[in-house]
Length: 617
Image (cartoon, rainbow, N blue to C red; front, top):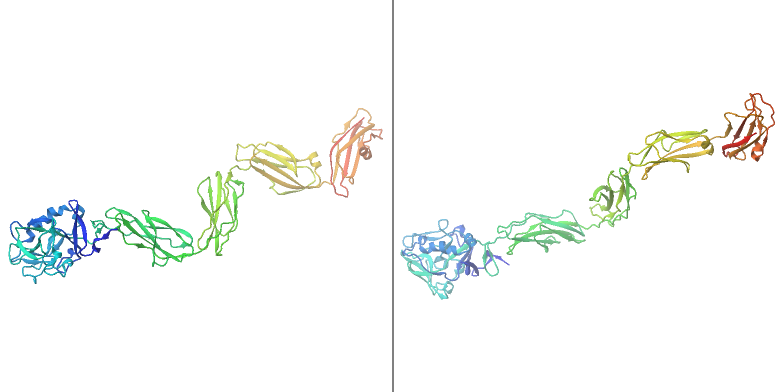
């Protein structure tokens, strides 16, 4: 895993590419060496482990470092040998130096230092000072790698092509204008003319935040930014699965690889990784009985560099048991469009005794479920929109802490969008027409908004059908209870029912009445003429006449006279015997008639006469 350059110990080796080839560099200092240095010098100081080459310090043999050939080469051709990202990362620093050369020059430092990216080390920086020799200018302070060394020390020895070789410093000899201080092949200081060749050991300063891979290669990669946020539900139920989400990180090198999410159940004392990947959310099962949870997330890149953690608040877990499922759900099999529909469900149980209510959801025409009721009731009346083709329901229970049971789902029901026919009558359905002593009729009409439907009307008295026919819509018609039909109706309470059906639905109109007829009289409206005297007759009364009724049958053969002679023939009619007329006179011609009178007997049982048949001669 990559580590930061600033964490490398002094004396350790890191690698930089020169013209594509990895070269070892020593870490010789971490941070700003002293107050003698400008703040730009705060970083990781690197010194090439081996010498790069042997070169002339200054061909004109003048020991002014700021205008030397070696300084020009270092910050020109040599700098270009590094990869462009490393070139850009090398810090532009202001190093202490002897301005104007050795003799008569001035030691400059801090913000007045020489601004360079690549430079040679000074005598002070490798551990020699004016106490070593008055030839050393004060152009720096000793670096950590060279601290505690004697005047002669093997740690200063460097090699060129495998051989120990002297190497140039940037320090001019203060007593001359042409001599430059060097570290000779034995690690001892000396000086040499600037026009001579000597080993070149470049130094540079890199930001301490750069990464060093396991093989020591320095990378300019930087860590991703911390995720911008982390979101955790404010209320968490034990035994449920929650979603943790976070805001995206950014990465200057565009090599963001993903995120690592960790969870703590003890207030942050210990953390366990629960997710690693590229998503911006993950789910986590919070076990029942967990006291609290908190989460944190960090980003990482392809080189293993990680951001800081973004940490959530600690959330107390509510260890509440969700209610059980409702015991059942009941939806009527017949569902009418445009009508109400009553849905009921069985009660749920809750081991925590904090059941709060139920949520009822509906979907129609195969769509998605939507809530239509929330509350404590076990029933709800829904309104079915005419035109729906199907409807289905599901219900679940919830408690006071918003824990939910599973759903109980009803079968899907087909919606009947047919509109039932209507019956219009002056007497409302269910009303009582009162007592009827004579025949009567009820006027009504029928209609249906579904104009294509064929209608059938059925008229029923009590349980017996009287008539069935195809009606004309909106046209008045009558349910007739008259004449012989009325006569056959027994005394007492009766119900007449009018039903209209379109083959899919029907409407019914019922009316009650009480028949109360305790006597009756039947005779011919006009007597029957005869050409000669009427002497014999036969008469049959068809119907139902209670045995205790007061029943009398009379006949006459001079019915046109002002005072006809009426002869009681009840016995003959009952027995079916011939009737022999006793009257032998008439004033207005011979004519036949009969009269029948019936009165209710003590039993109160009713009866009827459906027809009278007979003949005479």
